[in-house]
Length: 357
Image (tube, rainbow, N blue to C red):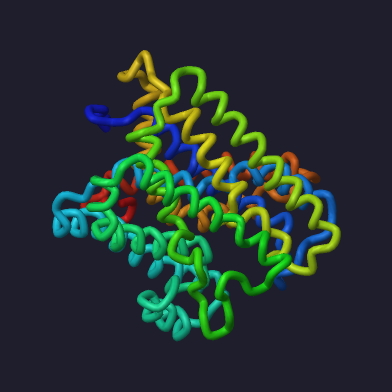
């Protein structure tokens, strides 16, 4: 395969590869703290998950920031929707169908349920494969991007910063809910309280655009700020998870500080983005950079397909080691490499873009 590098942003390829590996390790860790009934598994393994994977909760927000870096401004709405949505939706539907039959062949569902799950794709997931939630969120961002793009393009630094400040405040709401279950207008008849319009993943996209356009701290200012955000955000994320392990009755309460909509995860994400976004390469034509570029291009396919590989790798390697401290990175790395190789092989097929994006 001949690799093309023209027009690539090396640092964002690095971020994309890092983010997709993070996704794989996050899902590997789930074997070691989530019981089948949704409760928390006891034991030391769950603590290793907390220390390892708290840093990696920035995986999905990093993907959104990378998208936001290139997303705005939207010039031609029809072309934007045609290119973006076709690249995302068609592989997603194909993998939903594959997962439906994957569950059937594993004996998890009968054939009728498999077909029913396929028909449910327009409703939610299509199958009970949790990581596919991301695609619905991504489609939502793409649908809204042309709406917000005119404002993004013309807004002053002060106006965008005002939006980001309110977005950051909205990211503290999960913690305020501990004290105030209903906040700023929330009630069972109103799910859109005061800060609702400033919450969510769009903030990450706007933050990436803001950093690209306005945030020009001189070296080493961006690195110092990035390191501070990572360390502070990780401390909140990991310690919050670890402290809840002995008492959390279920995974939902345990993962409070792991939420993508929390200020601490946003801090880690922004810190990593600030540090890595300016990385340069002295050898753009090297074999390593060719591999990095190819993994980056196939990251969407890796995201969609890695769960099948992870289940197989886990079943093969889980019993070989006693501690999750060793299991998690080994299983994650093997899964990551194997899934990439599969996507690389699929790329040789005709119309492979419909499988790997």
